[in-house]
Length: 120
Image (cartoon, rainbow, N blue to C red; front, side, top):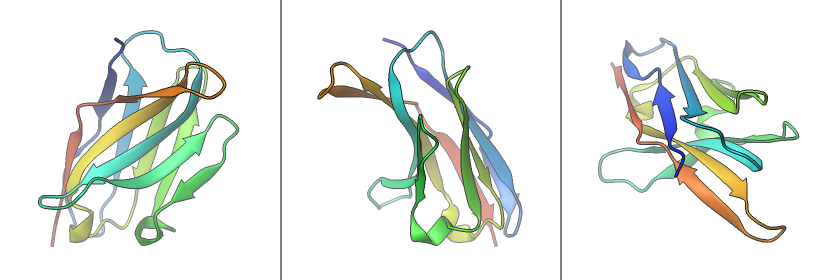
């Protein structure tokens, strides 16, 4: 099974920026969409941003205007540019790929997560 590899997390002060990257470790076909999720301690995992192969994006309200998701379709790489970071953005960030198996079935592949910590 192809793994997703994330990078770019770390420790940053409030107001700072980080750029996350995610790419499959091997070849991955029929990716319909890729996205970033996050999970803070004691909280459920939530969708942060998602981008489809057509370039449509969606974000949770709390990051609109601060985060930007983009992708390199040729390399199946997805990025999350995070600006104006806040302490409440602190979480483990996970990459997800939605891969089409048939016209009605798709599988989800997850990365292992990268820690983002924003200090106040």
